[in-house]
Image (cartoon, rainbow, N blue to C red):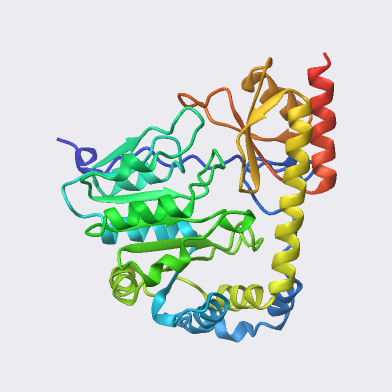
Length: 351
């Protein structure tokens, strides 16, 4: 017998490629193409480095207070972590402990099955329909919990709030997690439902719409008891998650609502323009409510397009997964980056 026989082995999540060259047009990881708020830059410049010799505020009070103010909640309804991945991983660990399978879509954020495997949580995936939409009826049965990304990734499709509520209401004895990483780009948030349902956890991130993927801030919203259980697990795992600079930066970003609305509106406008251009070039796709478009071409394979764009130093995401291996996920960049993408695709389809 070897020590390796007792190692917990999992297949890890595969993140999007991070190219070293700055010349690359990077449309493969759904990052915000715009810089963070000017208030964030000021917060960094004004930050007292002497604070780093001390342990951070375990409650992230400044950040939590700004979140409460922004969303009209109490601090007891808010949980923070190191990006939404940290928040979601702790949520899996906290709430999914029955012998019944947790349910989530077969095509969705690919970290869900990784966490389930890591924590030995039984799970079953539910097939999206032929248009890559979540079928709410599939979640109206006995289970150990439900996780839904809304809008879903990588498909970009939104499940209407009425259907989300139907799932939450049916599963009143299980926790339902709604992962809203992309909700600010045109979808309807389930946040208002937390007052009505004590089994609902809504998770969001600062990585996308607030242009802070590099600083790692995630948050969750729910009723006091739900958040309390989540905090108990966090403080049994690592009390000091968010450092003082991260807390200051996150709070500053929340204070600049005008800038937040400006860059999300620009992203949405560019997305809609990109849709029109892609359609003109022979692509088909759903009605994305995110900062990316999930598309396939009527004639060219995804592999061919992916490789051609890569040669042009334009990176998009290709998932080699059943049902979606002929699709590309293309992040929304700046107007200039979108122009470069469209020009490259025009050259390819005209060959």
